[in-house]
Every structure is written in C-alpha cells, then in structure tokens.
Length: 312
Image (cartoon, rainbow, N blue to C red; front, side, top):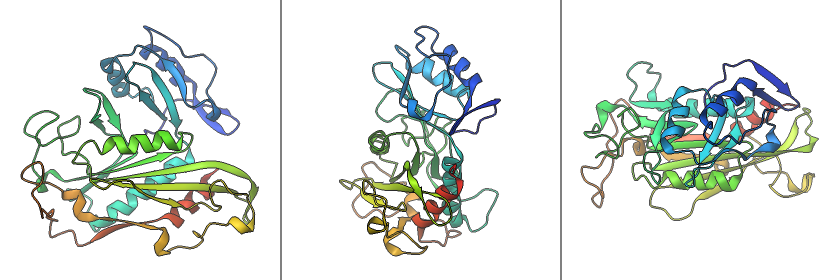
C-alpha cells in the first residue's frame, strides 16, 4: 500500500482522501458504482465497480491514483476496496521491513536482499492481473538467475522483469481474516514464493490497559510452500473471541518469548533451483556476505507498535 499524497479529510477514526474517490470513478467509468460520500472503516469490503477488465484494473493501479487503499479484482470483473492504510498498518509494515533488512548487515547499496513494498507482481491464478503485497523480500539479481523471458518465465519475475519475491507479508486492518487467508494462500500458487506471513489486527476492545491503550486481539499466520496448512499465533493483548478480563490475557506479554517469535530461514530468499520442480535435496546457496541464518520476527514488538499507534 502506498503512502497517500492527496489532501485528507477526517472522519471519526478514519483519514480519507476524497480525491481518491474521484479517481476511482475514472477507473469505473464504464460501469460506475461508487458513491460520492467518503468511505469509513465499517464500509469494507466496498464494491466500487463491475465488469472491469484486468487491463483497466492494471492501468488504474499503475497510475497510483489509489494511494492508501487495498483493492480486490474478482474473476467476474467486480472491484472492491477491502482495506485502507492507517498509522498502525504503516508502522507494522515498517517494522517488518526492518526485521528483514537485518540480514543485509547494514549494507545500503547493492544489498544482497531487497526488502520493499507495493511492487507489482502477476497474480499466479489470474492471467495478466497485477497483484501487490505490503512487504516483499527478494534476492538481488546478482545472486540468482535472471528472468530470461517475460512472466511467467522461466524463471518468473515481477512486472518489471526483476527476480520474483520469495517472501511475502500481508498486513490487514479492516480486511477480513478470511480474505487475508485467501490472499496469502493465493501467493503460494507461485512456486518461487517460499513463505507468506499474514498479520491481522482485530477490532479494538472497549477497555484499556494501564497505559490507556485499547486492548486488542491480533492474529499472525505463516504459510510455507509445499507444507499443508499453516502456523497461527494469537498475539494480541487478549485472546481472540474471549472476554476482556484477566482470565483471558494473552501470553504475548514480553519480548523474546520463543512461542511468540516467527523464524523464517534466510536461504529461502535465494531459492533458485536449476530446474523446476527442484531436485530432491536442493538447498539454496546464500551469498557469503549474508551471515544471518534466520529472520526472527518478535510478535510482542508488533503488538506494541499497534497499541502505540492506534487512535485512543
């Protein structure tokens, strides 16, 4: 999700760029569905168009007139706004990028691992449709085979012909956990995506902690290529779906608790087998300048970032 540059209008609990609504109408001119009044968080998912082709949808995304929102283009041509940016979302994306950048050992230029967001890839299940993530982690092109033909390769690349992301992170605020799960699983239809991390902030509770911050449940899901199912963590201040009282406090109450740390092997970023499917026993080769064995994401730190950034 990109940062927003339009003039903002405030609605209780929501910052919204009114200019974005006008720009959406340009996208949906053939079959406009959007209303003039501003969207609120409770509006999502919000249908904003129908019978929109993949080309029309891609052109809209590339014009970057949609900053601050997440969209879903369905196979029947319907387009929905499914989420929007806010301080909690932005802070968590920044923290995740910091965690992945640790493996670069302070290198700034020509880093062995590229960590960014908002770059377009091709949807692995919808021909020609663009798809973007909040965080994407991919190898420097000097360390893997370069795409030799346009997508789908081999090997596959992003929209601009750079190496495909190997690790994807999706962060959801108003987006439903079911929709988030589906998007995470969809990424795995591209075999070069080795891990997908999904993080969901649930609605704020009505009660507060000693620091005056609203209690909140949060969920993390980790998907691994070739592994059935997924790992899940309930890491908010209170257990999801339980009453807000001390009997249901989350165990995620301090940093460095192993049960609330997510580890992803760094060598997954350099997954680049000579053939597909990869031969049995294939192990990605990590550049000698990368000495870290695993990325470690501390869910307590993510929890605290959300609590500190949310509107109280």
